[in-house]
Amino acid sequence: MWHDARRTIAGEWLKLRKSRTTPVGLLVYLAIFAVLYITYVVAARESFMGIQSGFYIAGAAVSAATTPLAFVALLLVSFSLGREFSQGTVQMVWSKPITRGGWLLGKIGTSAFHVSVFVVLTFVIAVVAAGLQFGFADLMEKDYLIHAQSALWWRFALLAALTWLAVIAVVVATAIPALYLGSPGGAVTVSIVIGFALQMAGGWDNISPFLLSTYLMEPLQQFVAMSKGLPLPLTWGELVRTCLIGSVVWIGLCWVWAWQIVRRKEVLN
Image 1 (tube, one colour):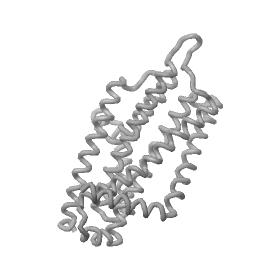
Image 2: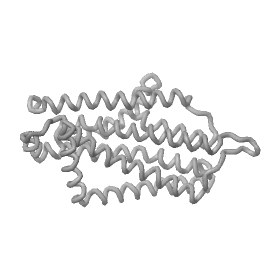
Image 3: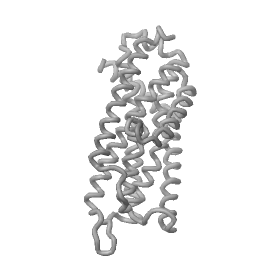
Image 4: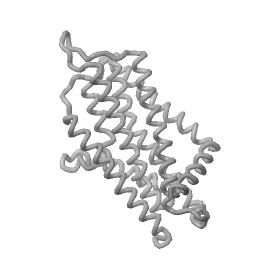
């Protein structure tokens, strides 16, 4: 299976290199992120929202970008998988001596790497831009130290890793409607509807700890509160356990579900 996954990844990488939509999509996303970043900078300077701190600006901008990042993830997976079925090329691929598990792993692995590039660029650009404009310093209230710079840095790195893991969970979860429907447009539509439903369901405290949207948004929202010196919504141990275990469970369950669809796809059709 691993050999077939590498073959699939090589084929997907060749498609990405030849595709014009890849750089265009990246530029569009970066333009959206730039607008979000500038919005928080202006709001902080005008004392409308937040504080003029590099940690706050970086955290708030990236927190606002989690929804666009999830949208990028569902677009990549929906078109990578759905287009194979809508164009009929999947039958040709599966008729070759290539395992379906390897094909699925290669497809999801390529999409996960692709969206990881978006995630890394988002954090790097936010840190560099916020550092150049505002710098990174201890959070002080007069002569009282609220949070040391070192504590802010390592928690920002920790929550960045949790956010990345949640984005990977979105990648794997989006494979399910793409495989079921076999249509990029249909998969995108269904994924967006499910995403909105998850965000609305996040208002119920009883089910919020089990939702993928919580693992995607809550870590950086907690950092934003920390960077302003506000009370934290969750303890750090509770936040890490919830998001780490939750994202891993979602990845595992969605992978098994997606594999079952691929394994039985001809029957389902």
